[in-house]
Amino acid sequence: MLAVHGGAGHLSLEHLGPEIEALCREGLHKALEVGYRVWKAGGSALDIAEAAVNTLEDDPRFNAGRGAVFNAEGKIELDAAIMDGATRLAGAIAGVSHVKNPISLARAIAEKSPHVFLVGDGAEVFATEIGMALMDPSYFHTTDRWEQLLRARASGDISLSEDNKFGTVGAVARCPQNHLSSATSTGGMTNKRYGRVGDSPIIGAGTWAEDDACAISTTGHGEFFLRLGVAHEIAARVRLLGESLESAASQLIHEALGALSGEGGTGGLIALDRTGRAALPFNTTGMYRGVVTERGEITVAIFEE
Image 1 (spheres, rainbow, N blue to C red):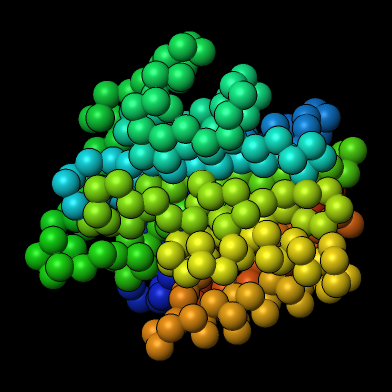
Image 2 (spheres, rainbow, N blue to C red):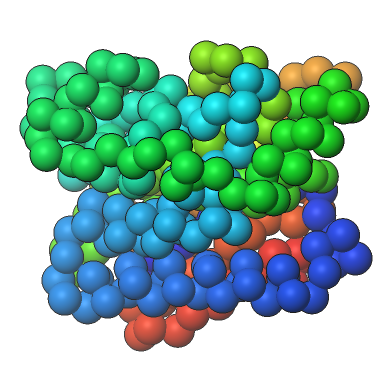
């Protein structure tokens, strides 16, 4: 089983438009199809999650990989993390600018280095050392994202949802051997400060997997997710308190996250527990999300559907 997300925000059908809505649903559907093929072939949970996220990273409609947003200096800074629920093996990167598929580099760090987290130039040097090709910055330059930056600069806004409507991508997977994994990849916020890192690549905040509890990938206002350690908090409630995944995930998103400040934190998450039950809560008007069952049945959604 596999669930994916492509970001959460204050979305409306009027703002999105039917053409973009259809393209986004198509992108989610494709990621689920790709992941399911890996599942059918007997791939590991890491294989399934990585394949699904690679597909979303290659889709310019989503804020990860090729479709990443620009920071305040007009540059791309990519973050990603991946975790295996069976072994707690984890890898993460932040602030890279030339890596086509950040989630694959995060996995390589987990499996081919003694480290968990590499950033910036150090991460890219490691990528070249293992034979991973780096991309010219022009690969990541899309007209829509550049125009978003110009609008954000003009208004002094650091955009999370209204204009930056295709956010962080992620996947949570359960393989045929019933192991779990989680993978998250993002370009961050439009017009973000140079060097800013959110929750996506932080193990325990935006990404977490443990077979005894659940796998989680989050999306939204990362500063709030960081302060709550959302992903690990949910897993701890499931494992230690025996709370259901649905209950723990819903409470974090709908109560704890929104209570952190006067404005409240916004976002959502996808999660799978060890029995294959899924939870996909969000406290915004929409979240790009989808699930494929072990029978290959695919469902995708954006709004409250």
